[in-house]
Image 1 (cartoon, rainbow, N blue to C red):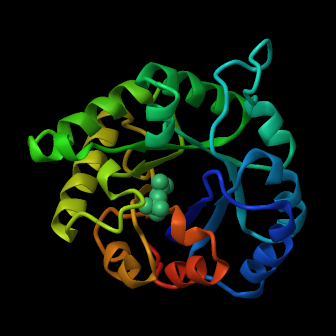
Image 2 (tube, rainbow, N blue to C red):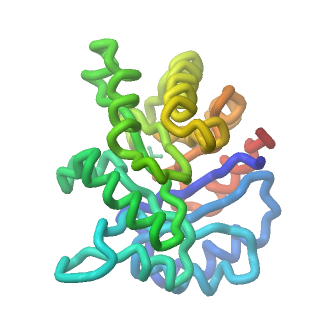
Image 3 (cartoon, rainbow, N blue to C red):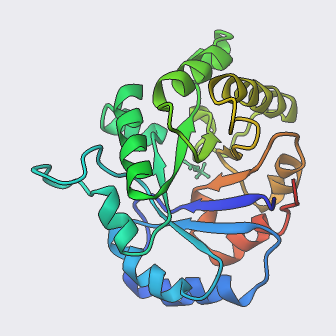
Length: 243
Ligand code: PGA
């Protein structure tokens, strides 16, 4: 399987920028499976711009309910209808900004799966938790409670202190955490846990992508800031390999 390089645009991007960005991605053959997760209003434009290519499209959140009185929220079914196949769930910014608990994330994962979307579920420890030696326990707890029993999808390990900071864990720390996540997934999901892609996220950029993507059990990267420029995103993807 090719490594997966997913771009999390967060609350960035414009409609005017979609054509040039998508064109740049389409113009360059990549050794990775590429996925772009822009803000909701850009999904239809990206779906058109990626049509006929193998570039994936994802949202950054969905609601746990299929429809209803939830002002400002977006249903997984609608995300699917406008052309996305993935949805990032449980990102630490949503866990923090919107007080999303593991139980809330699990509800959203169920909704995504029911709508036919592949969830990309984010887990990761804070700096305090890492300093206290609790990182693996924290992540294991997030996996246990954020992933419902029907889970099939992707997991992204994103240490909170590495997001947008320019800091990354050491290769040894990434290797240890990805091994711990793999073991937890195999225990929790005997049928699919061995093959669930585990992405690394947090200050991934062209200069460190080669080293990170070479590590065992790293199935790809979830890229924030460095996904906003097509050239930078493609430079990260150029380091991808078959795993
Ligand atoms: P970053 O963000 O690459 O800007 O650190 C990653 C993420 O939050 O998904």
